[in-house]
Length: 152
Length: 152
Image 1 (cartoon, rainbow over the protein chains, first blue to last red):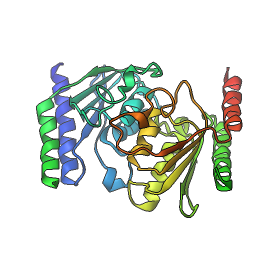
Image 2 (tube, each protein chain N blue to C red):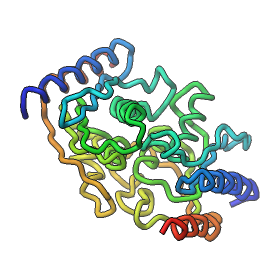
Image 3 (cartoon, rainbow over the protein chains, first blue to last red):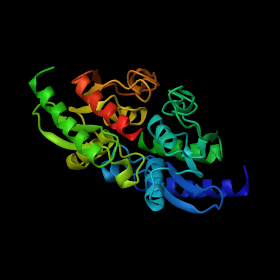
């Protein structure tokens, strides 16, 4: 992990914090062109705000990045997200042909990359991004635990 | 399967045909309120048109239905879709708390319900819709095979 990766994950953490302030589960995501470091899109979770069960941070960021590039394929792009992607978002990362999926906290209950269906390890998965987990794991996880502790 | 199910799947087939005419992989989907038969949304695949890797027919239909209801949860609603949902759309159907997922053709290579990660059978899946596969299977499958034969 280089200095850029730290910076991208800090941006994603900022989006997660902003999501928490809107009353959403605090997850944030950034899509970056790997070769240049250009940030194509950044987003937080907006499920409740948009009344959209698909509006996870990384789903919104991937959709925005694809719209900006004018193609459904994000070849050569990397995702930075504060939480291990769920099966829905992991499957989308495969469809979008992402180069790399970098995440913060591991998600034992809802993750789909290192847990549950392990989407990229399925024989029917046609594109497997490189996966790096545990970037700023403590900070990403603390944000989520604090959010759920307040809601109880 | 009752007469209504046939009608809903015919609507989904119409959306699949329209998608084929737009040059998209021909899949169509309809979201219905189970108790009244009200059609909340219907859509075909629009991945290329929208430059959106998530724009599968059932993803678009679930998002539209949720926006109409003003909530991210489609409790008491059924999905009719011409092809077995992929892992992304199956995971979304769980998040959306759909009552039932009814599909036409089985998808050995890309499906996520009866094939691949079998999303609803994962211990980490929190909501399992009832699944009915094979409705108008021949017609749904023929449309897809004809589309791919023309592209070769």
